[in-house]
Length: 206
Image (cartoon, rainbow, N blue to C red; front, side, top):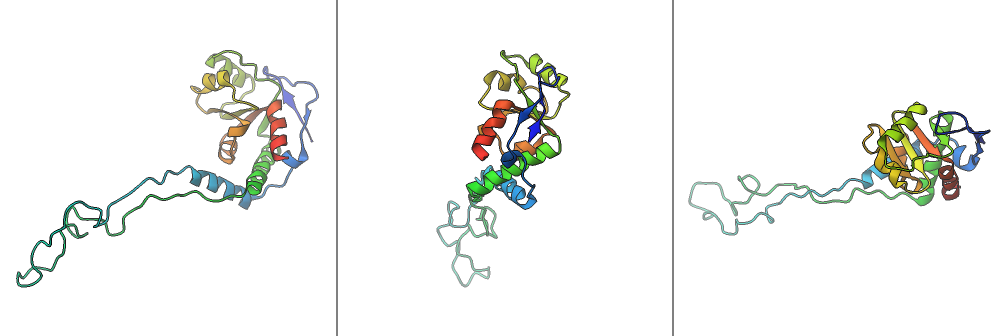
C-alpha cells in the first residue's frame, strides 16, 4: 500500500512510501478494539479506596449496657453500623480493575486502529519533524503549516525537544511508538507519524 508523505512545510515529499498491508490494511473489528480500549482504561484505574467495617473502627470493645432489664434495645458495641461513628455495612475495599488481554489480541487491535486511521485519512506521514531545539513556536508553526490542531505526534523514539516544546499547546500530544496505545491513537482528530515510526510499527505489529 502506498501513502503520501509530506514535508514539514506541508508540501508533498516525493512519491510517498510503501506501508505494509498486514499492519495498515486489515479490516476493522469493533468488538476487539472496544475490548482493547476498555482493558487499557481499566488498567489505569487505581482502585485505592477503603472504608471501615465494625471490626476496623477503633473502640467499641465493651458492651454499652447489659442485655436485659434496661428497656432499651440490646446492643453489643457502640461501633455498630446504625450508630454514629460506627462501621459501614458493606464497605468499599481496595481492588484491582485490570483486565487480561492477550498480546495477540492487543496487537490485532492496534493493527485495526492504524488501518482505520488510514481509511479515514486521519493518518499523516511526515518525512522528518525537523525540531532540533526547545521551541514551542517551532512546533506551532509546523502544525500550522500542516493545518492540524487536535493531533497526536508519533515518533520512532522519544523526542525530548519535541515533547517539551509541544506540552503547552492545547490539543497536541506527543509520544513514541512504545508509548502509543489504543486510547491516544483514536482520541485525536489526526495522527502525525514519521516514516521511521511507521517502519517501527510494522516491525512490532507485522
